[in-house]
Amino acid sequence: MLSKIQNLLYSCYGENTTDKLPDIRFQLFLTAVKSMMPYEDKIGCYLDLKRYNNEIELLKLYKNGRDDSLESYLKTSKAGEEEDKLMEYKILPAVIANTEWDNIVNEAVKAATFFSVSNTTILDSILLSSAVHDFLKEEDAEYDVIEKNAKERLIDFSLKEYSQKNNFELNKRNIIDYERERIKKISTSDIYSEDYIQKFSLLRHIFNMNAAVGEYNEELLSSYSSYLLKLRKGIISPEKLKMPEGRIPELREFFKSQTFSHPLLGKCKIVKRSEEYVVLRNKTGLMKVNI
Image (cartoon, rainbow, N blue to C red; front, side, top):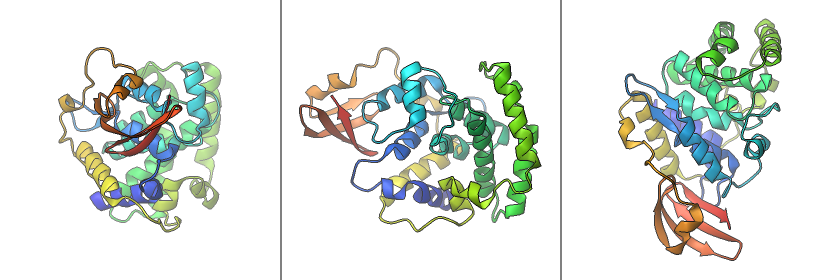
């Protein structure tokens, strides 16, 4: 299992983990990883939306690259209507950290709809989650099995029930449009077509269509793989991951010291200063914070 998780992360983020500023894809993955909270009464994890919102507000200071869905959220503080082109990097931690399908689809859709209520984004989050779940669960998941399971899970998932369970507001038009697109997907003879697979790094890896990964930071990706596996097995106490109570100071307030400990970023060291930005290093790598 650990090797499967490692290979999946290597394939998606490998070249993003060398000694340079990671781009927005890996940054989105990390913010989601840090926002996964173990259940107190069962094995599995949920996306802690309070923590996630704090992480996203912090990310806007050091994001490296553009994510239109993120930009829309930062401007409006609500999910947009456009398709989220980087959704797969936001839902992956929720899929890996859970073993039960009901938990997986609930948390993956929650992560996706944080930024976008696009029908395409919601459907894609279910299909990606289903494929990754089978890839991790099965010794050697065949294409036909992955396809069959995806259709069954798509049939079983009710967006209306999901929205009611999670107090998630959707208007009738969103639900009707979603149901129309869902029926189209279910009736498709080849859900994971080659064109569809090519849209997503996760699917290219699962169906062996990824190019070879170049240089990467094995220690960093191994660390996150091990951490996600521990979440998956339920051997991390929720108490260890809870956010500190009270106000989190502005990040700039920490820049008075060369080294400091931040409630969300952990131990950090300033490696470069200028009038326009500060470059920090923590256990996840480098980040360039605009002043």
